[in-house]
Image (cartoon, rainbow, N blue to C red; front, side):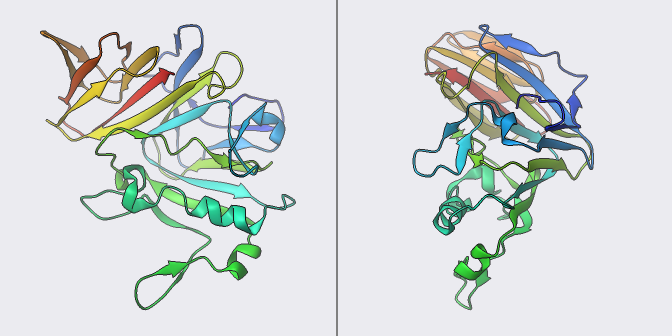
Length: 269
């Protein structure tokens, strides 16, 4: 997000492992690190610049810049004080990205969801179903969630779930573990979404591989760990945080790291 003096919360810092890079003079990529207690957020809607409103409700926006999560844990917080958010908008938001359909919201091996605690809490019935009652939602002063990277795993390429956020004045993410890592994707000018940039992610366990297609008119692949990228009869090595342009139609990416890695594909439609 853009920095506005006195209205931005910017306690995270650039990772020493990575120098910011410029993609085609349109997008800046930065790796940020937050330790326990560090916040990144805003105290005013002015920080949002000229956001893109959600096509269905005007209380959600796609901000000018976005980020992808690669490590650690954090708390999301959005205050509803003075915002007058309609009940139906709250219900719409809570229905997005259900864990059973989105790897970025759950780990299929453990069955855990990435949100371990949060508010509002649903009413859970004896048959296992649940709902967020109107009474709970009408009395909300905000929404928060504690989320852990280890509890999510995208088995196939998925669109980022961090495109839409509440259009409120007071909102932040706070690291609740040391060495929490995100990659920030910021346009050189304007709004990345309005400029037709988009991104998706996938996770690979050690030794796993996945076919990766080039998307859009410009396409880059960024890796959160060591991997091999095969194309035709050539094999390229990607080190951690390498970000390279894809020029062929299809590639095979193999995780050669000793740990699970996340890949990010950023492209211009």
